[in-house]
Image (cartoon, rainbow, N blue to C red; front, top):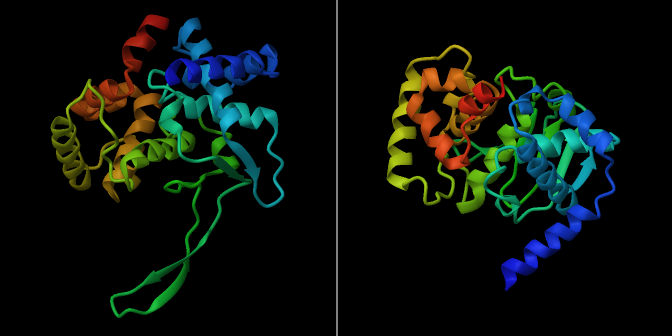
Length: 254
């Protein structure tokens, strides 16, 4: 009963969307990342993006005005990982904050002597557990071009990772993949990546298992052939997790 009620509510939100087809088409044309999707997949992606736009508030930082076009570009890329999972995978939080460019939040850290220090380090994105996703528009604007880097996907993968606790590279598993298999595949690949850099894969992925998952997920969607060449078992695991096969889908669309 609750499931049917939720589905009815979602269809109602989609039907009442006031975003014009032309604006959707313009956003899609700016994202080569989505070129391989079929018409049916694009429609489902658009529906998910409408639900995301309905459920999340967009806040511009440092006086940035977040336009409809900006919101559409972010929503379409954010919903690609959940295309075959559903909008509920982004539940439990409400806000997307967009900075004009990189930002440097102040953080307090405690050193080995128990002393508290305030540090600043520039970021282009971050995701808080049960909190907002934060993005640099300067870096978001250039995402989706199939260069292997995508700050939107990166941060939203952290949100998936956080569904079962702190980000640790081990998101909730579903029936298509056993937890033990995921752990073995990613532990082996992460250990290898720390010692053996791979062309086209950001070294930021070697800093923590959560970043390894986020970086490789970027590549999975942006340049799937590269990931399959570097870590075929990781590619297969991500394909099962996301219920998508970008290599096969890209070949079909050519």
